[in-house]
Length: 270
Image 1: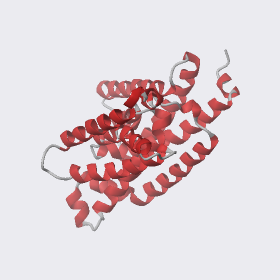
Image 2 (image 1 turned 90 degrees about the horizontal axis):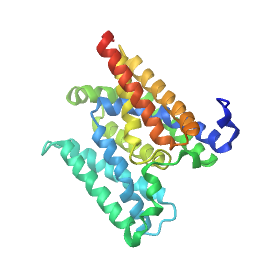
Image 3 (image 1 turned 45 degrees about the vertical axis):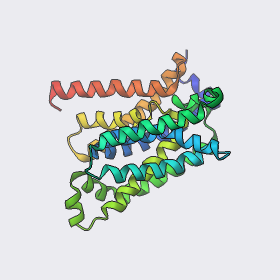
């Protein structure tokens, strides 16, 4: 059995290209999501995909990705607004909205027993990605890198102390909302290939693993991207030879790396 036998197939080449684009995105965004304590937030965004798709079905939108992205942007901005209000625990509010969006989406999509048509969204199918869709992901990667270069310092300051960031003249609300909109768009664009059930894990695990072993901020971001890309490539290759879904295998590899780095931190005080 040849190690690179999978490259004989065009669908595997496309999947590999997609992984090499998606995983750096997850690695970059994941560090900020972890720093801003937004794990519940990104999970709720993933679950909102059901409602976005359901809205597209109700209004007869041919490409439901459009309705998913539009709903995700509105949903993200609403959640972000509520997250900054100190009425009740933000985690509680986000959990309530997440549960509501899932229930509404499932109720609409499951009418007349039609949910089986949409069940593939749960685990994703990166092997079905096309060349045009890869180009779309590449455009998003470029946009994300530009946004990262322009807005990172401001977002990092916001994550540390919002009041201090405001006192330095940083447009806190603008940057914060721009960030959640970008996360929403990337989550919705990636969900078809990664899956609703596991997309949040791919956003959080590489960053969490990197945090275990990084000694400074630069290492933190570099390790997060490296772990994300490594998990993606190895997970895809293993999924081919083990004949299992790619998305869950990516998460399993990332989970193993997290536990290894966690143990390394405990044993060697990294």
